[in-house]
Every structure is written in structure tokens, then in C-alpha cells.
Image (cartoon, rainbow, N blue to C red; front, side):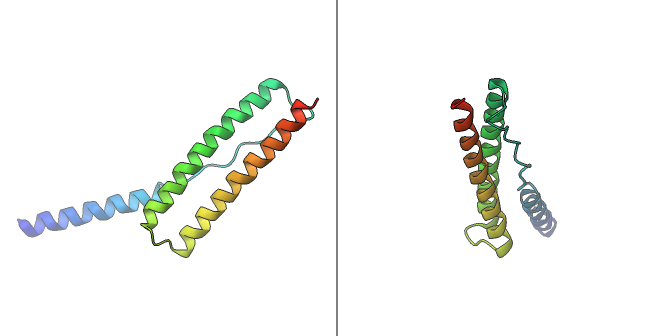
Length: 104
């Protein structure tokens, strides 16, 4: 009986670990409107989508950190860095377009 419980516990643990690793995903970044022609509603909508994407990406980064438990693999490091870079580029691009929009 003890052996069965130990085996079951081990299988459940492995199953949850696999699920956690599979859950580390992030969607595609939203499109940033062109500040020279976008409407105010489009800029507001884009801002909300970008805030949601940044929050999703931050959850993804935390997931990668948890998944690697402080000892990141090359793949985990690559995924982390790519997601961070995408998030930073998106925010920078939006800020540029927002500045253009406000200068009209």
C-alpha cells in the first residue's frame, strides 16, 4: 500500500511539473497603430492591449523563472531574453507612436 501511494504521489508530481512547464507561454504582441493617422480610440485601445500583453509577458517571465528554479537552461534563458526584448521593443514603439500622435 505504501509503495502504491508513493508511486502515485511521484506520478502526480511529475504530471504537475510537466503541466507547469507547458503553461509557460505568451501570445503575440499587439499591433501598434501609426501615430500619424490613428484615432484617439485606436491609441487608447492599443494602450490597453499593450498593458495586457506586458502583464501576460511578466507572468510568462515568472513562469520561466519558476520552471528553471534558479538554474536556467540555455533554452529557458533564450525564451526569457526574447520575451523581455519583445516587451521592451513593443513599449518603445508605442511610446514613439504616442509622441507622434500627441504632436499632431
